[in-house]
Length: 440
Image (cartoon, rainbow, N blue to C red):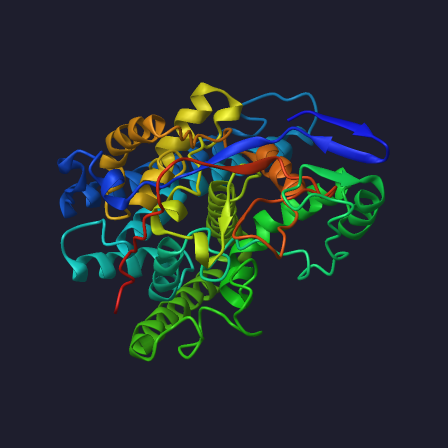
């Protein structure tokens, strides 16, 4: 994207995003049939593996902690001993949180019925794992299914729904001073938008950090970043919340029971072992899990390259393809990129495939994703984003500020009112497909 300024107007050359007209049959037929097979035994072994790794991290940290003393190592200053111990346990929380995110991913697969062929096994395992991580299993499973059915839909998607110009209270769109697609904007409008939105590096850093640390509980408790048409007070713990059907009431109550038991377990552990022990061993890794969840999903669904749709242009395939694959921690080098993908079972690296068919288990998703990628490339679609990490969150947070109230295919604009991408169309008519939303 390049830009130039003439007579008080800034004009940029935009990227073009091909708006797909593929059918769901086009997408699913590209995936080998054996990739759809689910195994309770194989899926369970990944739970065991994650728990063994986390136990190994804990055992390693506790062993090394005993060596951080003058009797075992000589450090030039006494304050270096607590500093070394702090660094050790900070490393423990980071790696435990990363691999615990893998457990979160498996519980998420249970909600998609990808863990096994049995719905009872799926929901039982998912409820236990997600409750242990402070997640209302059924409540989130239900809204997450709606997210998959309407990804990128401005009024039906459940999360990461862009705010419009009017919702942010920005100056009304003026066609004499700016282009609706965001290719040009006058200096006057640009100044007004920047003053209204703020565009400082410090503001973006604080905003991104707050989002990573508090975004997940804020979404569950008060629908932050969720569907804007839901009434104030909407949350995942009310059985009568607007996003739940009456027949789902018992499932929501069961989810709430899981959260009550989780809170009781945390409280009881604090009473038994002390706050700082529980804080170090569980609560900080828990915050890391929440952080990774937000970072991964935010970057999968938010980027100046990705379209959002209003009803006249939305189809299920278009929504499924309005996502990006990213290599988690790939920006930190190939080893960290491999560890990020390995620990989280490829949830970030195979995300487009996951939206095309969410019942494919993660251990088959790699092969399925490669096959789907080849089919998408034939259609001119390349849905591989930059590596997922904190720098990318900062960039996206700065570039994705708002969308217009007008238009049925829209892209994010930045604080200057410029959009990096515009839609491009291929020949053919749109296909209308859907996805079954769980009726439980």
